[in-house]
Image 1: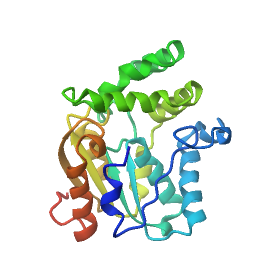
Image 2: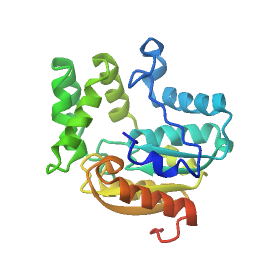
Image 3: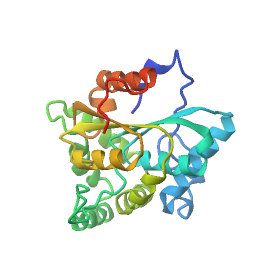
Length: 243
C-alpha cells in the first residue's frame, strides 16, 4: 500500500517496509493470538525489526492504527526514533461522549465484528469503500478489499477487534518524539476532531490538513502525502500548521 510513496524517499533514506505477522507475505505460522491480542505485540515487532537491522534515528511512518503501534514502540525505546509521521491516526475509534468523537459508536463496531463472524469475506466489501472513499475511483476500494480478504478470517477478526476496541488516548501525552500528524478531509474512520486531538496531546507535534479525501491518502493522493512528509523532514515542519 506504500508503493506510491516509498520510492520518493529511497535516495535520501534507507526505507524499510514490512508486513504485520498474519498479513501480506509474512510467515503465517508465526502468528500468535496471545502476542497479537493487543497492540503491544505489534509494537514489539517494530522494535525487533529495528534491532535486527541495527537502525537508529528512525523516522517511523505509520497509518491509522499503526500510528498507535509506533507511539507504543517509541515509548518503550525512545532512543531509536528521531521523528514520527502519523497518517490519519486514531488512538480510540469509539465515541466517548461528551468530549471525544472517535467516529464510531460501540454498536457499530459490534455489528462489524458480528458481520466478520457471519460473513468472513463479505465484510471487506462493506468496509473498504467506507475507509477509502473516492467513489469516482472504485479501483482503490477494490484494492483495499483484496488486501482485507488476503488475511485469514480469524486473524482479520482479531486484528479488527484489537484495532477498534483499543483506547490509547492516555499514551499520547507521554510521547517525546517529534511527530507530524497528517489529517485527511472527509475521513469517516478518523475524523478531523481525532487528528486535532492527537496533535494537542503530543507535545510539540505538527498538524497538517490534507486535501486528500478518505482514510488512505498514501493511496488516493500519494503526491500530496509525499510533499507533506518531505516538507516536515526537510524543514522541521516549516509551512505546516502548528498549535
